[in-house]
Structure formats: structure tokens, C-alpha cells
Length: 244
Length: 219
Image 1: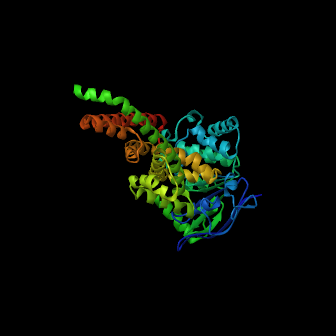
Image 2 (image 1 turned 135 degrees about the horizontal axis):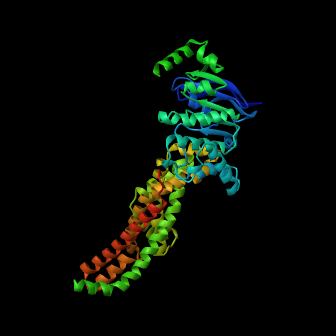
């Protein structure tokens, strides 16, 4: 079954067209990684999928139900997790409450049930010992793992990752990537925007290369990373390797 | 000094009668103003066109005119169109509205100081905008607003003294009343000032305690 279908998605800010008609699909259990230069609309595209940013054109379907045009995007957002570059943990809540608040306030689960779901997911990301800490007391890597647990607690059909390691110190990147890899092995459907090419190679079933609001090419990692058919992809990867 | 103490002791019961009104005015106005401030502050931050325009207009009009003029409109002008209010009611209404406009601005500022990512994250787990505001943004904004809110309370305590001009027998009015009888202007008004000061210091201390209690790392 198609978990996500995007048809001719468009977004503009004023005169500038950020996304120029993007289409792709994701199967259940698939991990798709989006790479490409900064400022080419990768994050905007993610925000359009759960309509945190309102698209200007095109259609988006989750499990064959149309998200675009729905009067209640919050119903779809319950099924689409999102992990942010800047973590965006709720600063006034403890780690446990950050993860509980979704099941409790959105799904209206009882406190006990929400708490047990939260604890289970904190355990999954290895943070059950920190559950009474506040976000400000955690390292960046820990914060991002809480962010992942918060998304998981809603039992989503799809998780969107918006450069989940870009705001992290290099030595903290690994622990977050490990958690994401674990989720991939467990069959979570994930769409990941990242600059970690090595990670993309490891975790992706498919890589999409985006530039200037368009998909330039897509395919399995070995193809895109080792033998790209498009000159632009080649240039991007070459620049990237130099930078390392 | 002994003379001052004598005057103070004699005036004290009258001043306490006045203080009851002062506290009553300040407490009810800060509370009603808080409700107004929350509604107007949220509407200024998240309102659609009309609610934004109305709430912005309200804030600008109230902040752009003197408190005393507002009070006189409620007490002296409204009777001309058939609405008669007692001095205390007219005072509470005008102080509440006035304080509400200022509190709205403090609350709006606090809402703006909450990172926009908080709203995004709340929406991303499926909260409605209203849930995101009440469960995520406002709790943080209300913690951040405490210092400016303390300020507002302190101002309000002192501004209630203008209610004496419409005949509310509050602290300032009582001082005026006593001084006009015993002609001890210096000693009586010093006593009045001391009482205001003690109240204000007490409130400032109390709110700094509250602030320490509710403050959490990172907010």
C-alpha cells in the first residue's frame, strides 16, 4: 500500500517558486532520504506534507486519503510524525510529559496509558533514565532522541525528519542516527532530509536528489551515490566529498 | 520623630479603612484586567483580521489616553447618556480596562518570545491550534510574563489613588481627609507614602517568590 503519494506539489513565497511540481510515492516500511544543496526547498516540501506550510498546488495523500484541501489537517498530523532540526521540545514540560502530551491530549488516552506509551518509547531511544529532566538539561543528541520518541508515541504511519542532525555537535550525531537506523530496521516508514550522505547510504531504500525545487533524480543509494545519471547530481556529490 | 509617630498612630485606623478600598480596587482590577489581557493578547497574536483589528484598536485607544480621562468618562460622562455608576464601580471598570490593555501587551510580548518552533511542534503531533496555544504556548508565555505582570500590579496599586478624585474613600482620599483636619500635611502624606511603599514591597517580594517557584530551566 502507498503510505504517501505526492502529485505535482508546488509552493511559492511571493515571486519565488520554492517547489516546482514535485511528485513521488512511498511504500509502507520504506525509508526515503532526500539530499540536495541548501535552500532548494527540501524542508519546505516536508512542511507541506503535514501542511505546517500550506502548499499552493498539487495533491498529497496519506494512505490514499487526501491531506491537501482537508479542513482538518490535525487529523492527518496525528498520523505523520515530525522530527525537527531544532528539536522544538516543549520547554516547560519534562521529557516524560513531552512524550505523553500527544497520546494524552490529542488521542485522549488515560494518563496511565499515555505514560506507559511514553516510557516504552523513551526506552526505545535510550532515555528512560532522563524522563524527569527538562529539555534544557539535556544534550543536543538527547533532545533529538526525545523528539523522535515524541513522534513515535503517536504511533504514526510516517515520520518526517527535517535535517535531524544538522544542529548537533559532530560527536552527538551518531547516537541519533543509530536510533533512526533502528527504526528503519523495524519497518517504520520514514522520509528523511539530511546532509549525512554516509548515513543516507546505510539507511535509505531510495534516495531523492533535489535541486531548485525539483527532483533531479531518484533511485537506490548505490545508483545515486556511485553512478548518478545526471550531471547536477554528480556536481553536488563531488562538492560534498571535497567538503569532507 | 515622636510627633510623627503620634500623627501616624492617630491616622492609622483611618488609613487602614482607606487601604481596604485601595486593595479592593487593585485586586479586582488586576484580576479582571488579566482576563481582558489574556483574551486581547491572544487575539492580537493569533487573531484573524477582525479580532486582530478590534483588539489592536482597543489597546491603542486605551494606551493613548490618560487613565484619569478614562475614569472621568465612566464616572462623569456616562450619566449624561443615562448610565450611572457608583464611584467604586466606575473606578474598577476603568482600572480593569486600562490594566487589561497593558496586560494584553505584556502577554503578547511574552507569546512572541516563545519560539515559533513550539507552535510547529505542537501542531505536528496533531494538536489543534487552540490546544497548541493553551497547552504549549500560553503556559510558557505566562511564566515569562510574571516580571512585567508584577510591574503592572505595582503601578495599579499606586494608580488606584486617582479614584479619590471621583470620591472613593481609598488610602489617598483618607490621607487628604485627615490632613485637611489636623493640617499635618507632611506627616500624614508621609504616612500614606509609607503604607503604599510597604504594600508595593510586599507584592514585589511575593511575586519574585512565585517566579522562583514556577520557573524551570530553559523557559
